[in-house]
Amino acid sequence: MGALSVELGVYPDAETYYQDSLNTAFELGERFLIANAIGGLGDVARARGDNAEAGAKYHEALIMFSEIIARPLTLHMLVSIARLHTETPTTRTRGLQVIGLVRVDATLNAETRVLVDVVERELSQGLDQTTITSVLDEGAALDVDTVVRAVLGRRWF
Image 1: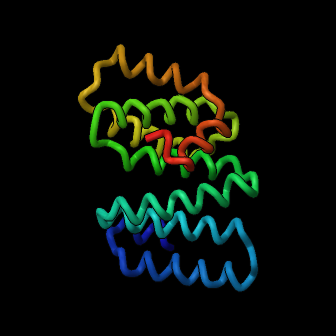
Image 2: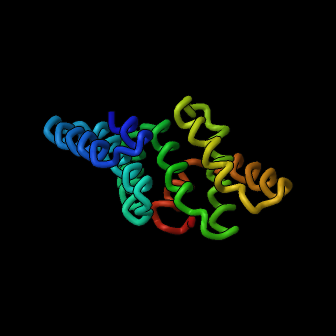
């Protein structure tokens, strides 16, 4: 319900759904559900235009997903974080490297594939096709765990 509410632009409802999910997940002690709800709260913040809050939530979820080895959702959080960095050609290029990395990962799921396509278009604006192709290829050669550590260490963007 939270994702649908974000999609429909009903952000107070989305935040309530994700916060309720987070509270329940904490009660159950279920880290996967905790991370998922935190990532959802990041989506709400991004949709509202609060990239700083979105980034903080995405980083928190990325830590949890990578610790519990939930690779498909680790990839999703990497793409979500990359989406926040469209301000310069350099950050867009780094984001496209993430897209290239995620696109070739065997655990990429359908939901993240859709997000990858959207974010790739957003990050590609203002870059020529030769650069885009080259950067995506560079990303495809990277290691997910290395990129996760760099992103979490704030050394990627």
